Length: 230
Ligand SMILES: Cc1cc2nc3c(=O)[nH]c(=O)nc-3n(C[C@H](O)[C@H](O)[C@H](O)COP(=O)(O)OP(=O)(O)OC[C@H]3O[C@@H](n4cnc5c(N)ncnc54)[C@H](O)[C@@H]3O)c2cc1C
Image (cartoon, rainbow, N blue to C red; front, side):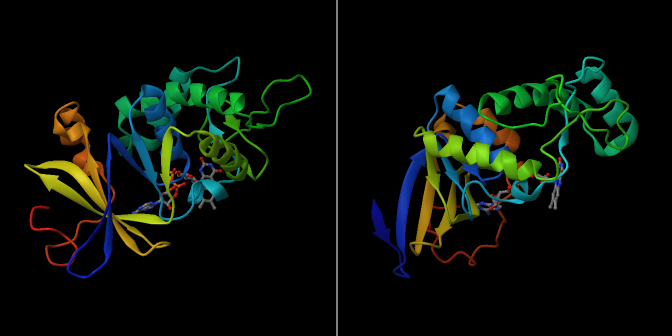
C-alpha cells in the first residue's frame, strides 16, 4: 500500500512478525532461524544482502571442532582472557552454538580448509589453548558471504529489502511495535509494523528493545512521523 505524507514522500507499509536489520552473517543466520520457526520475516539491509564487515573477515573464527577440544574448554579460554567484558551466560550459548554453525555452514557449501586426513585444518589463535580457528585461508568472510548469499537468494520465505536503512524505531507503551526505514533505491519511506508486538510474543520486545541498533532521534527530526507514531 502506498501513502503520501505531508512531504509528499511515498510511504510503503509492511506488517511482519520479525524485522531483521542488516545483511551480515549475524542477520542472515537470524533470518534463516526465523524462517525455520515459521514466522513472517523481512530482512532490511542498508546495503545489499549479504554485506557488512562479514565480507572482509579474514583469518577464521574459533569453534571447538578438534578431537581434543570441547565447548567448555573454549568457554574457559574466553572467560580467563576477556574478563569482565564477557557475559558468561551468553558466552556459554556461543561456544556451543558455534559448533552447530560450522556444521550448518558446511552443509550449505562452506569450504573450510581441511587437511589431507580430511579433518578441519584448525589454526592456532592467540589466547586459545587449543587449535580451533576454522578458516578459508585469509578470505574466510568472503567464502562465508558467498554461501549465505546463495542460500538467502534461494529462500523465498525471507522477504529481502535491500538498500533500505532502518532509521528509527516506533514505540508504544514502552514497547517497540515497528520501525521506519528509508529505501534509497526507490526514494520511499518504509513503515514496518510488528505483528508479534500485538500480543503473541510481547516479552521479546520488552526484553530486547534497548538492544536495537537503529539510532534514536529527538522528536521533530523525523518529519514523516504520523502523530500516532510515538
Ligand atoms: C578487516 C577485518 C577483518 C576481520 N577478520 C576477522 C576474522 O578473521 N575473524 C573474525 O572472527 N572476525 C573478523 N572480523 C570481524 C568480523 O568481520 C565481524 O565481527 C563480523 O563480520 C560481524 O558480523 P555482523 O553480521 O554482526 O555484522 P556485519 O557483517 O558488519 O553486518 C552488519 C550489517 O548491518 C547493516 N546495517 C547497519 N546498520 C543498518 C541500518 N540502520 N539499517 C539497515 N542495515 C544496517 C550493514 O549494511 C550490514 O549488512 C574482521 C573485521 C574486519 C573489518
